[in-house]
Length: 319
Ligand SMILES: [Zn+2]
Image (tube, rainbow, N blue to C red; front, side, top):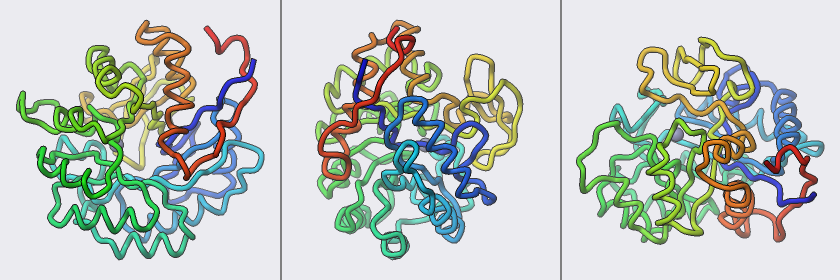
């Protein structure tokens, strides 16, 4: 049976390979392309998190040198940070040391060096001058997402007016305790122009908020794996370049060792996530597969393929 291939707009690494590791090699990126293709992924955005800009540039160079012809296609890069909120619960596992105010010249430089390969930027619109920054980023052909934020309703509206189109992993990258209302989750839920990406590993979101977001956002929602190098690895305690020591459970929950309430990205591929969502009874196969394939394809629009890329799917995936 053939189905539209999966498209993953947030991949930090896979199977022991970490896109944010300073020792990353291009051949390792090519290996991830092959492994993801075997997991049904036809295209993805390697994601670089908050870091020193010199390191971001060097990692981008390593990743974009990869030959993806025998695997999932690298559709460009997703920069998640460093212009996010430094507020402790909002920044999640990102290193506060490198968080900084939006600087369009930094992005312009990267976009020039890498010939328009930066496709998505996640930032927090609570910085001063955010609306102008969003316009300038959009002018570079980059989609702007809101995430890791404590922005007010007004700041979210202004960023959306300026061209922001997505809420990155809504419901995560936000403090565990919030004002009941107003808060940034309600503000982004209420904003019809914003698409939403969700981490569907069964740990990042509870069933009630996951299903509520899907009902409210209707067609404008898709899954991202937000997978780290720990996806596809066995349970244990590991060292991560993103958040220091992390703990991976046998069930696939990945958290910071010093505070297990704090998630450190996911440890599942998009396909494994779909399997988990079906297994948990949160979605049926058709719904879950669409959220991982057609929906991100639609969000990408002209930056993706004109038609969905179909792939043969083994019988065992259909359950
Ligand atoms: Zn994040």
